[in-house]
Image 1: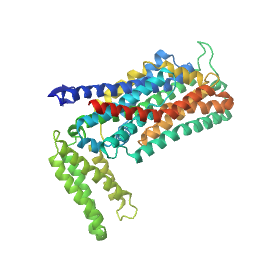
Image 2: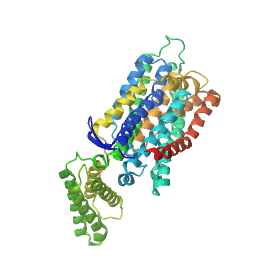
Image 3: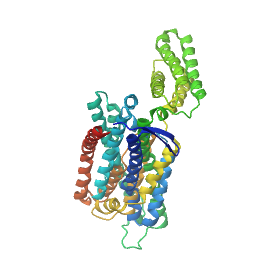
Image 4: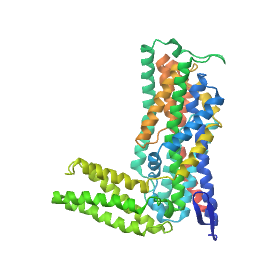
Length: 474
């Protein structure tokens, strides 16, 4: 039963008008996404500090805040490409045309399913991917959406692209770490690099300590830039689900700037048609779309969902068609015109693919604080239980160099990747390169593999059931 509309003013968001129970759900969702990123901090970031702690390069009292700081900076400086990839997994356009309660069901089921599984695996001390969990939860909620609303609830193309990234990353981590370790064994003459620390005061030489601290810093930063963006994506999903007119497009970008991008695109298209009349049909269609988008641009406002939805849809169509023309090798477009169209499409993407600075700040803070709490369970598994012997300096540095490189490249390509999977498999690869398969702890690896196999189906089922439950009451 709907309650009266309440108006509450939130910091940064301004006034929010929602019915009483939806306002409560909205606040719960905001707390849940901060909670998810907080859990992600102490669940995943333990991977980054495990090697410096167990090689005694840094004491925990210094390593944890240091990693938390660089996670914070990673989220803040990492952009929003990965965040937008996460958003594209679910039917954003459909959510904007349905009651707010539908978006509330979807968001809550994704967040709570992710938190439940992450906390469970953390309690058992099993390194498990927060990325894997969240994507499974989004697929589960999307399937429930399809069941109830008979529409496409999951972007399977995007899910396949992300799934491939999650599957390949640990394989790459294992192989690259093993090769790098073998290279170091055969090339370096530094015996100190392969020393296994023993005793409280057995610390690495200063140059090795600086190497290990640097690799820890890189993993922390790139973890923030990749995993932190997932929290940004979830936060934007909440805002678009509950306040679509205000957050489905970036209203802070002046209309004049968008019009300039439209006009530049039309100038290139008209010039091309004049030079090559045979392309009039193909390019003329895009010119009509741009003219329609100009009308929607003039009409859109922060209070009208229908007009904002229409503008976003038309803008997405224009961006898609511009990119198709740029990629078309058969087109007679000169290179400078292709560059112009590429630039205008990116300019227009800033209208639909964005996150306010305050959203990024909240997620950065949640991840940074989470890093400083609850880290020890996962650190013990990473440092002591993957191999049958204590980590040596070379194994710690090798696994973190590979992890930082893999995560950094994935962020650059806008793909979510699992820090847990990459680093755990990197340590396993370094251990194998040091002493063969017998150097691995089979029991720990079986637990990690079991969590890896179970995460996706469990998250899907949890989110699907939670969506069905919330659908009864919201």
